[in-house]
Amino acid sequence: MAFTVFQSALFSNPSLFSRRRTFNFCIQFSSFSTASAFPSDKFQLHKKWRQPVSSVLELGGVKIAKDEIVRDDPTNNVPDSIFSKLGMQLHRRDQHPLGILKNAIYDYFDTNYPKKFDKFDDLCPIVSTIANFDDVLVPADHVSRSYNDTYYVDSETVLRCHTSAHQAELLRGGHTHFLVTGDVYRRDSIDSTHYPVFHQMEGVRVFTPVDWEASGNDATSYAAEDLKKCLEGLARHLFGGVEMRWIDTYFPFTNPSFELEIYFQDGWLEVLGCGVTEQEILKRSGRVDNVAWAFGLGLERLAMVLFDIPDIRLFWSNDERFTSQFSKGQLGIKFKPFSKYPPCYKDMSFWISDSFTENNLCEVVRGIAGDLVEEVKLIDNFTNKKGMTSHCYRIAYRSMERSLTDEEINDLQWRVREQVETKLRVVLR
Ligand code: DAH
Image 1: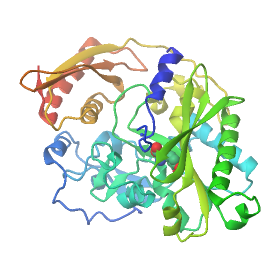
Image 2: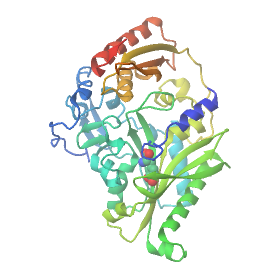
Image 3: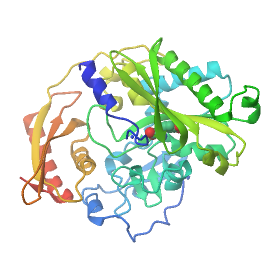
Image 4: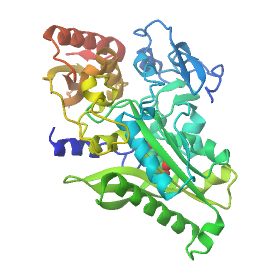
């Protein structure tokens, strides 16, 4: 794939939390309320195509039955396909690009801050809405809280949509230097750089007055300077001598907030979000006199660039032609595509209803085609004189492992059309 195309796609994927747009199960489920605050027909769509429930998953030593996570009620929007990803923990495999990258970042912190940072990569991804949103000051009306963007297990429990969900808990637990790596979950569009499960690493460092008093700097400037120095060093460790720039931005949890971009193969690439932790977060964790910095980075985005991996679905591939190309500790290896099978495009037009969202469409398509769907793209959109809006979507089907037969694709497309019509309440044209 031409790098420029790939790169512009990466640019279109800023953080859910930035202005530019991005339990312990571990807690009990008995508290969910069926008096729904959510438009019910939007969630009916998850009901009928669910498989019978059987499996049990072990997460961080806790056994969780599938029917606790994937349930037929309006407060739950977790499909089977997402349940099957829980517990895969790609970031804990030393031979996997995500594990190799995690370990390379660990090496940087171990070398520069020996024995300082506590590392967590096995925290339960099922968290309370309080941990995921309130504890990090995400406003009550923030888009990331919607059922359209986040997977809810019940009205008070979500699949974490960022590793920032663990910040407050770890601060309360007395940790002052830590790295949290984990799988995170977001309902999203479908293309080569978006997948509903991806991986992040969060870093936090807390300072006490003795740290900044001698510097002559105020606490916030001291933390911001230290943060930038640390992350510039990390970027050099991963990418070598690259050009970098800092962009001012907004996150609910930090002030000031920044994004780091690096100049890589002809373009600026957003690498991470970070900032000086909001004082309120520290105060609530009992650290009134302290300041802290925090950062969050997306492992797939970095790994796609570092290993030349052209499609985010490859991270989930068990094909030996993919997995055998990577080895423990080898960050510099470039992935050699083993072959590119032809894509097959199918268009679908329909009149949308008020409750239609692209994320819901993508969930239907993924539920049927799984990783055989490469892209779902809006190619036409108009409103007629009667005020009815029509969308035409082009679906690209492509396997990374084999050629698909016409029969197979026609069957998938037929099922997609059927379910789009029944579950999304749109009218096919
Ligand atoms: N949680 C943010 C996201 O998922 C990333 C992030 C930005 C984490 C800034 C941080 C931070 O800790 O300070 O988009």
